Length: 264
Ligand code: IPE
Ligand code: IPE
Ligand code: MG
Image (cartoon, rainbow, N blue to C red; front, side, top):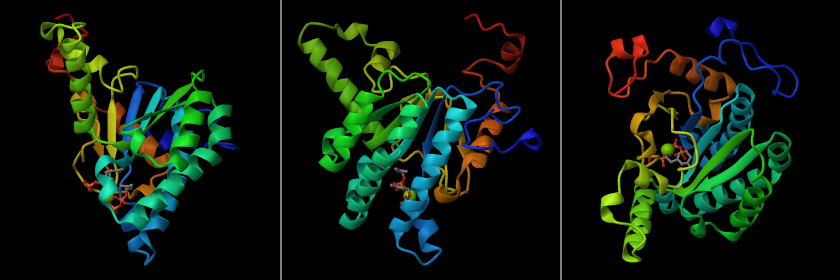
């Protein structure tokens, strides 16, 4: 299939590469890891890796929109990343602000709806302001959701959902017996997005690092040793091709999947 891959001319929003249209995942999430190592291996400060990584974000968002994904969730900053050196944290916040300001036009012109998950209250005003503005202004866009995970933790988001449900029970609006996978899932911040189909992690690490713990329940996992600053549109295409070769079973047998007899 990769022999059909072609680079799109012009602005990169032309036809998707041949072969990728079939069996596309609806929702892809990426743990964008390896910026620090990319920089350190070149004798550069870690922040230079984050700067180069921001270029990958631009390219991958464009490529995702071009191939026709419905939703792309990017792990940009974890709840645990606050514990990094203050200078690195503030450098990351400034890069995030720059991204939100510089990409605003492209996001609007390409019908991308920006969303964010995580403890957004913890973000500094310099990020919060352009973030809130772009979320509000892009709310009616409907061609793709770009969901940024910021100050995000999977355990934290599960705990928050449990708290919300507990408050409803205390207020008499919900019975404990009504809590099941569906009601719980509806309390999660990703409730309105398509289910997660593909979770990508770059940089060779094979762990989830507190990313979409609930949502990844049946996602296909794809690990690549490519460092995030080197992960560009071709790398996304390679991950999508790998996904297309997977058989998703959801607990059924291979024979059931092949026969299309999916009735319970
Ligand atoms: C990912 O790159 C970016 C963030 C976590 C914000 P890292 O900064 O974790 O890069 P490595 O893992 O140190 O190489
Ligand atoms: C996960 O990467 C967080 C983001 C990519 C934003 P980390 O680099 O923080 O994860 P660990 O520390 O290697 O598990
Ligand atoms: Mg890392």
